[in-house]
Length: 234
Image 1 (cartoon, helix red, strand yellow):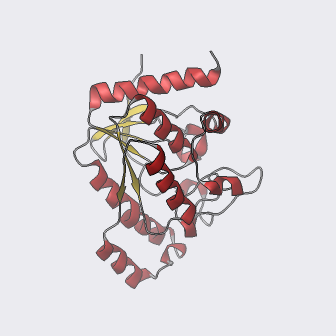
Image 2 (cartoon, rainbow, N blue to C red):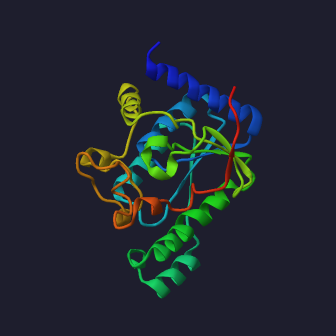
């Protein structure tokens, strides 16, 4: 059995555990390369896991194209959550349409309105949620666990691809002809909102194109920075 196949089997075990012990489970699908691996595996092996994505209103066209491709390819519906329009309007009135460039505080407030608040609505009634985060994506993710209790949201959190490499992610996508965001072909390894994402040059950290004007330790939007309690896996 290849190393990739071993990791696929491990992910299948994590997905089965989540469904067995923590239903209902939902998958926060950011439509990145890792998330498309999980999309495909969930659709193939655990279609009872729900999927959702957050439409911030500032996404690249390529991301919307992928949303449509997911809808057409997979039987598991992708539920879309939007920010509250009144909060967006208030933010823009106070800080400007691109006010997030002015300070870390402004940027995090924009992320709170467009991402964190919709996430909270998406997680209502769930006992666990899944993400496609990997440990080597950023310095802020080095201490993550495959399964942990997310105290901020009051439910279990699973990161099934935590120990996958970037090469393994792309090997899976290519082998299984999984749709992916075409910005990846233009050197966008990590894709978020259009004004907060740029391409990277060879040798740069894969998250360097996200909020590139900030220091690396600030490069989270608030979705995944939480008080977590890892659980030991046996």
